[in-house]
Length: 137
Image (cartoon, rainbow, N blue to C red; front, side, top):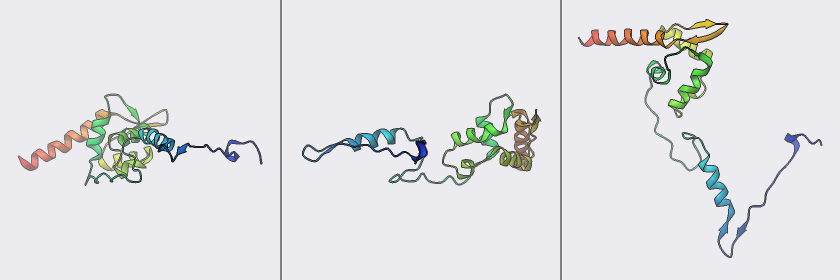
């Protein structure tokens, strides 16, 4: 046995007084539950109804500013927007690049770092909206 952190055991006594009804565990649990990130499923919570569908390009339009952004940073923005949407939970920058390529959104590399220019996204969204207007006009 060594003194490495992964080999050390720690335990704590949580006070409970059956005579008075005091239970320190309830306070510890309440503090822990308050620190859980919104959207995280926990035992005993009612699952949030699944959203039928999300549009990646519309979601990107919501989370991106006006400056180019590294593709590796974008999945976290999408997870913050829709924390319960399964496809965003494990999305990587490489997977996002492939999805954008399929949708016709151009990505660039600057210093071997893939980036997305919101202007390229807006061009594709504008084209898509024009097609929709033609279908109804």
